[in-house]
Amino acid sequence: MANMRVNIKKLNENAIVPTYGTEFSAGADLYACMEEAVTINPGETTLIHTGIAMEVPVGYAGLVYARSGLACKKGLAPANKVGVVDADYRGEIMVALHNHSNEAVTVESGERVAQMVIAPFLAVDYNVVDELTETVRGEGGFGSTGRK
Image (cartoon, rainbow, N blue to C red; front, top):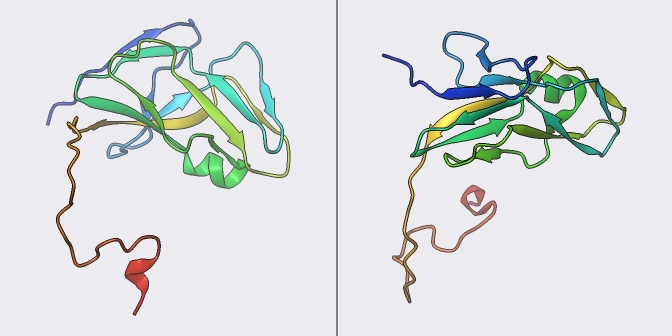
């Protein structure tokens, strides 16, 4: 199966093109690209530059997720949980990293700060109706499927 080609533009000569950790990784690592290290205090959110822009193909989105190692070992994860890079966006990819830990954490340039998954999505037309079809679940919300 041939890989899809996604065009990347380096906005900074030190930028690192996203890489996959293994052959079957779903997410490609995004790297910090900054003039100097950035320290994120507990409870703070800081925008981390990657130094790259990209052309996400039409019909797809670039989904920016936490890296499990960074989240578990240092308490850093994207503040918005999942960042969305739309196909028509051409600006720099930035990661809003939030420090969930109780200690200041320093992010170095060249460090892997998040991962991006290029995923297809369905564009839909929302249709306003008076009634929705009925289901067994109905309006059962949070935790309702675990009840006996």
